[in-house]
Image 1 (spheres, each protein chain N blue to C red):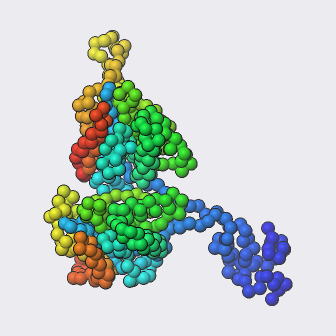
Image 2 (cartoon, chains in turn brown, purple; image 1 turned 90 degrees about the vertical axis):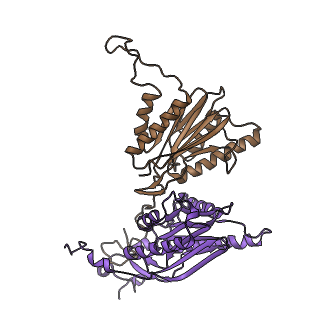
Image 3 (cartoon, each protein chain N blue to C red; image 1 turned 180 degrees about the vertical axis):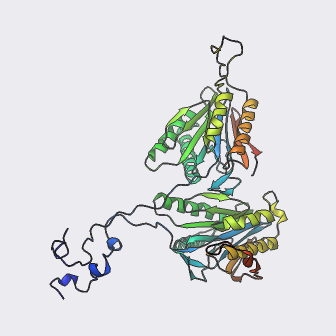
Length: 260
Length: 260
């Protein structure tokens, strides 16, 4: 290292500006994400799909609001959502969730204008994955679930990670209480660890086979899952918003939850 | 004097220590706002029958220094919307200029300015979200008060990350801890808006500002209060916290060196 005059540092008098070109790099201290809490849950049946989410929005220990929806109709009317046949839920960072929802909504609408037919849930699911992956190195910090009816009219549910990996599933819980709800769903929807009584000797019992559940059962499962999550997770509560997608459209149900 | 003319008049490292060259950098990464400088504290607002009331004190702090004591943090937009700013004051002034230019442009359009508070809130939240996505945030948390397209009272919040939420009463910063519980007790969330009068709402805000003045060390007893109704905006910018009683202060013990 030399000084301004070109003298070796050790031999020059110590003047300032000797190392003007080696400023240390400062790290960004602005963190562009926050966690707004809450949970979402989707379950499919043979001719319907239900996507639900609580309506609380939090910032740390503060409750921002008791009604901030996490479940949105996609491709419908701007204000009422009429005419939509696809539903998206986003949980995590709410501002990213909002941005993602608006982008997917625009995509589904443009598809209809350009092709003259509604976008299939399969196509929409693939497109959502692409949108998420486009921001692979500055992700939308959300866990998304997409629901609708497939080409055969069966309930379709797709779940995503923040960078766009996705798969079709029968049921999925996401968000802060996912670890509380998902095991309940495994047991009650996919009948994990349930065996047919008296079907074999000792541990050689025959597992109970999973079958699509009727709508009433599924609605009650969703309610039970959320009332239980509210008891044990502080970020979940206030209200439950349920979207039921059937052949005749999307029905929205609101059910109050504990506000504590 | 020595033989290094370029060093003449410069502080000697061996006397004053090395100069931090960080401040002279003209190359290298562009420095964005990493933390706010001159800041405003809480904004509180509540909806009532036929309008919205909003209040904020007139202080701009520089760290713990009460730097400017007559800063108006409630800004008018058009004839029926108010924006309350907390956070960085220079960013507030930038946003205010932005809003001014929109207002002028709208007024030159054939219909006049028809943007309502809801439109304004959508716009501001997108500006904030865009800037956070560029890692160059506008360091503000804002409340927007006014009316929506159906002429119903509108109150909503947006922060530096682009997070948005709405509730019958809202507060930013310290007010989220101190003012919200007062407002929730006075006007429980189930209370219909029709049962809250303008006078009750204004009195509640004055009470909140007083509590904040008592307990928020970055607050001031001079404040602004605005009421948006169908009739227009009433804004009072030099209010004083009245009927102060510091009697409670005597009873507070146990901070710092004083243990009992």
